[in-house]
Image 1 (tube, helix red, strand yellow):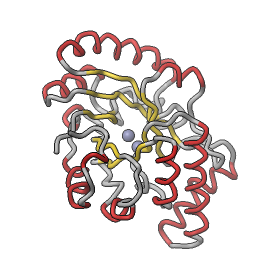
Image 2 (cartoon, helix red, strand yellow; image 1 turned 135 degrees about the vertical axis):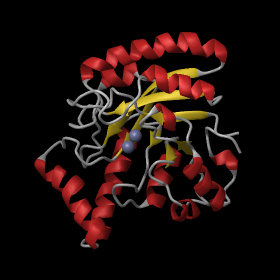
Image 3 (cartoon, protein in one colour; image 1 turned 30 degrees about the vertical axis):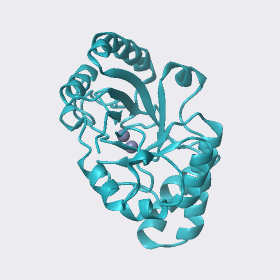
Image 4 (cartoon, protein in one colour; image 1 turned 120 degrees about the vertical axis):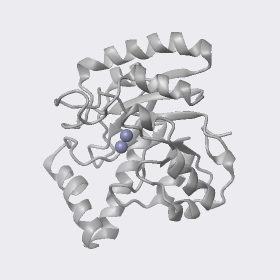
Length: 252
Ligand SMILES: [Zn+2]
Ligand SMILES: [Zn+2]
């Protein structure tokens, strides 16, 4: 089993209002060159969505990223590496609101969506549920089922309302009803990620999804060019699950 593309990598543009390079270390070109050296066929540059105050991409940089991705794609595509622009948007509302608008959706090639603490919520009430109660529930078990249900519904609303391609690291930061989410994802042709940085989906999740038909991506979630194409943990989890490799979109 071989992974042919890395659909989730960050660059210095995932820096919010901080100094470039504080969160993710490498330039777009460095990530692309690393992918080329590893013999990948696809690389996606997927910065954090703009509502994250520490790591989010600044809106004014989106155009620069698009131009750089296009420039590099012209150079690397003839050599067998497709370079695409993605965005790892943030879930910011219980109704499934994420931090992209029409302009962003039109600009990018791949829309990813994940849950991150530190994004600006739609309202204080939603922020409480998304970022405070969910964390208390995860740590202490207090109202865990109730909160898990609410957050899972938010994810489901997001994939109903936005053209999301990949849900990143499901279950890494917040508890989810993975089976319920997978059933809706399958209907909408949304894939779930096995993230090699976080180890989610994990083995337990994959076993639950044996009889579901949802597809997967195994990605690195690289925060430096050295990590591009690092699929070790994701591959290990997937191979232990015994699931058919045809379930992984970016594998041969
Ligand atoms: Zn993430
Ligand atoms: Zn990421």
